[in-house]
Length: 545
Image (cartoon, rainbow, N blue to C red; front, side):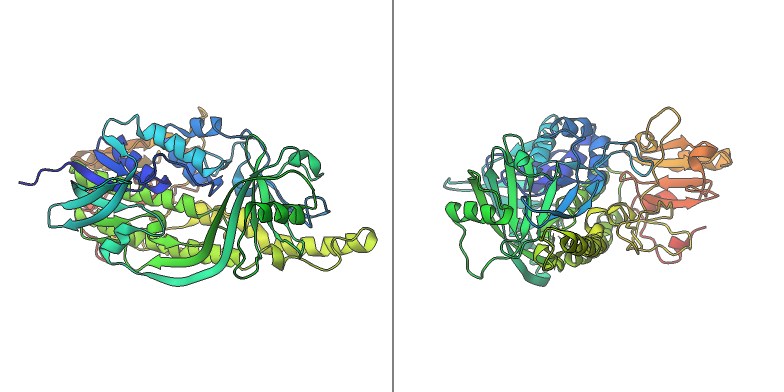
């Protein structure tokens, strides 16, 4: 018999790997997270945690901890200002980017948050470390893996150490980024377009910069001047900012002195800029040919890469960890079937492709594309040119910062564990900025605030939830409970006001990840076998009334 060191070996302690570990750990499933660095949160990458990601943190009980870690407070205005320079005139303003305003909203239970990725990773790590079945192993590299029908033998190597060690797991998951060793082991290539642009992310300290310009607080300032266009904004306490030039000479090398001069040129403000780091990266749009080989899976940047415009990447990778995490936990806990694991790529690939197309469209219009001669001039003519340019900017860039349609509106239009109701389910929202809640199977369950002030999502628990309108037949509800077996299932009674027009069916079955698995007016025998992955749904079965 095979002796397992762990149920799941996870390579990479970024947001996707930590999310997967937390999903497993919340169900008591043992896992080991292997990370080559000596801690999480090295690189100052993403800065937007969107409403969907914060809703996952709410499920895990740590949304408040992330809010407390915000360097400027959660009420800091996440406006995006388009200026010629920080020292120059304002051309356009997009307010409340990524829905970060903390005011209550009917469409979601948690607002977005502007916070450096390394702070999010630290909150995730601290929570993972509280889960008894989760073990984190730092300063360790992935060195290869082989699998058989029952297990995966993973070879690991301590950073800077001689020799290797072996770890036997039931499953291996690669959350090890763009240069994924697990992807290489699986033998999956990447298809798409490499090298859309060459970029630098420069992090620097600049005391007094926030007070040196007159545009007020914002999360990001797009500087449109032709000399040094790019993005700049506050990142952390201690006067720490980021700067990302969007047009560089081919082959240019950015030294610390050169970076400081570039910032002066871009902002028009001559201040002492202390360069803390300069990270070169290439924007690409690539997707893995396959996400799985037997017992080995890919999540996050290991299976999809796209430009960061729109703030989707880190959030989408974390959602991969959630999706695969609850499905692996179901299988390892004994109530999930093989079709659940088959559904991971079937569901996530369609989401990845839609988001990649949206991010690439955003990338096609950068700071250097928004300049118009004369918009930096004083006087009535400059005012007229700025007004005209501002309208064009709002038309071109609002979709990048108001993204609820993409973040909440994507549906799993085809999945072996979703039981359709005969209606068309669009996989890609027609409008990336506008979100219309929909309880059709495959869509995110519509959110509602309840009379007691709680979120409807809070009643779902960690398994399946059967939402029942007042007119649902009690006999149908009893049949569902009688047939649940080991499948975790709770019932949630909706009032007429809560159900409204968003939940028109008498019963709506919601998965652990808050997506609708089925809806109907009468309970269907065998339904739980399909949605829990024990019986793969054929086309006819996905049309159950």
